Length: 308
Image (tube, rainbow, N blue to C red; front, side, top):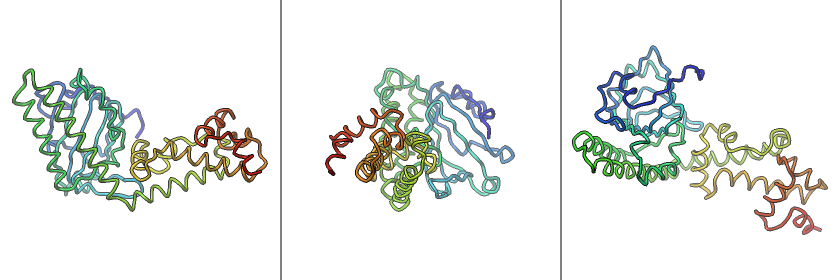
C-alpha cells in the first residue's frame, strides 16, 4: 500500500463517523466495543494516521501479523498501543472474517485530555507506544480480565459522571492501565525466552556481518533503525527486548561491537587510527577516538601501545 492511500483521522468523532458508530459522548475520550468494528473483506487493507492515542484489547480478530520471524494468530487476548502520528495498517483475511467473531475494546484519548496532568509529561516514557502492531502484547486470561476491568471503569466514569473530578479519575486509571501493560510486556519478554534469545543471536550475527563487510566504510556506523528493520522489529521493541535480556539498549550493543572490532584491528593490524575509524563507519577519526576513550578509559593509541 502506498502512502497516498493513508487516511488521516484528526478527531475521535471523525473515527466514529467513518466506522458508522454513534457519536462519542465525550469529544476527547471514547471506549468502543470492538465487536462493533466491521472490516470489509472487499477492502481488505486499510491504513491511517490518528491524531489521538489508541489502546486496543482484542480477541479473535480476523487478521494475521508477524511477530519477529514467527506468525501468531490473534485467537488470544492481546493489546496494541498507537500514538498520535503513527501509521497503522491492518490487513484483513477474508477467510478468517467469515469464521471469527472479534471482541474486545478500543480506548481512544486525545492528547488534550491529558492537559495539565503528570501523564501528559510522562506518557512518552511508555516505549510500547512506539512498537509495531505485530509486536502486540499477548495476555493471559487473568491479565486480560485486569485490563478489561480498568477499561470498563474508564467507560463508566465518562459515560455517567462527567464533573470536575472526571478528568483526574480517568487519567489516573489510564496511567494504571499503562503501568500494568508495562509489567505484562516485561513478562512477555521473559516468557518468550526462546524466540527472544534467537533475536539476540541474530543481532550479534547481523553486527558481525556488517563489520566483516565494507558496510561501515560505505554506509557509516550501523543505525538502530536499520538493524531493527533487518530483524523485522521496531527500534523501540528491539531496544526493550535487548534491555530485558542483557541490560543494554540496542545503541549500547552497537557501541560494544564497535569497540570490540576496534580493539581487534588495533591489536592485530598496522592500520592507523584514522584508517580504522573510517573502516568502522566514523566520518571523523576524532569521534572514534572520543567514543573509544569514553568506553575504555584509554585512547586508541594507548590501547595499541599496551600490546607492545
